[in-house]
Image 1 (cartoon, one colour):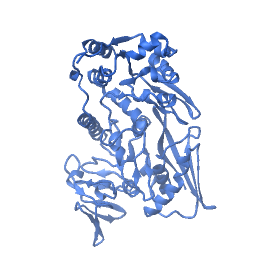
Image 2 (cartoon, rainbow, N blue to C red):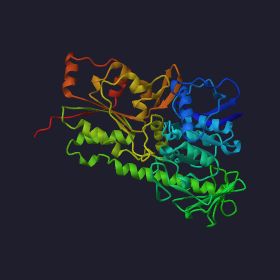
Image 3 (tube, one colour):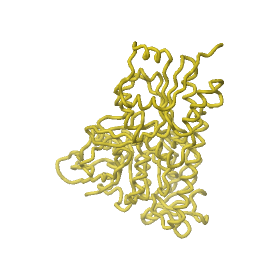
Image 4 (cartoon, helix red, strand yellow):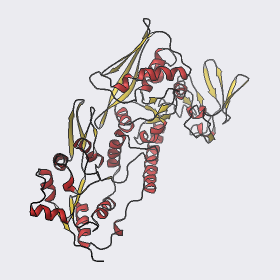
Length: 481
């Protein structure tokens, strides 16, 4: 049997829809994956096979062929495990085709069937919404990250069993089959999920919701938070639609009251953005610019540079306060707008630097790389180019302490980003463009400046350094105690 599941691949700052085509047929038993795959994607076959076995699904001795289309885009990462497993389940008849329509799946599988966190969920969900998808099933750790995109239903899952229950029309919050959730609907779950018992053929979990099979339809008495807007109890229909009052509410984005669900998703996305901003501000206190004592000239130069997002070079003796002033410049810059925050968060999502607690970057980044950094790590690179330091500093401050100590090749990579506010990286895996609109702040000692003037030390001979030095200078005088 043939089946097609939708997922996404990261290409630069954007994601591309990928169709996972699975065919299960009679023949010599085997598991073959094609479609321009990276090494970690080719290993997905063994992870999926063992995860299905430990989730109660035994694969028959048949030939399984998986193709990731389009085949001209290289597939890297471990996010293809879950869509491949769902495609096999659909091909074997455990899941109906209509239950996976307009749903994007992404996630890594452990051997015990748990769904692990992946990178790049934010641009994946954004692209899925643009391509007409109505629901995204992602790892539970990435749920808040994906839910920042409005007009998109994002469901976080913890295990393959939970995905199967979701596609069968059962609410995973009621089942509580995942081992990562510490609380399900207010009920504490142990290592195997919320407990379930069998009473006269009727299942009941800890929340008291009962489920029974009647004519192939699973129904249960909804918990108070599972009712529709009108307060009516919900019922799971065979087609996966949760019917409250006149069909209100939905599972996996297949509801009938589109207006109500759209408003609910917009409110949820807005509330999650406010919560993420509040949590990030509580977790990380910005250094206060008002804490700087003295150095009126340097402070004035920093304020002028911040007002116009200009570059700044600080020259002075050690201990004069160059680094202290540089670290406090993000605090006097304007706050990130929602669009800027989502753009910066997408960069950090692709790099795997977003956490479940802080799913939105709302504070301007401040990066201070060591002077031994390589040009590839500075600008970005790899077989599949990833964002470098200058892209991670997008809409923020890039601080180069002891700037003359940086290699000529590293400083030369600043030329294009300073002029065009973006950087283009061409590697074997393709050519990608990343944003790089940052405020460059450099620092150097007076001793280094005097050595350069005397000819003992050499000034870097590249356009980036000289172009940068043409902006604002702030000379420090030795501080008398």
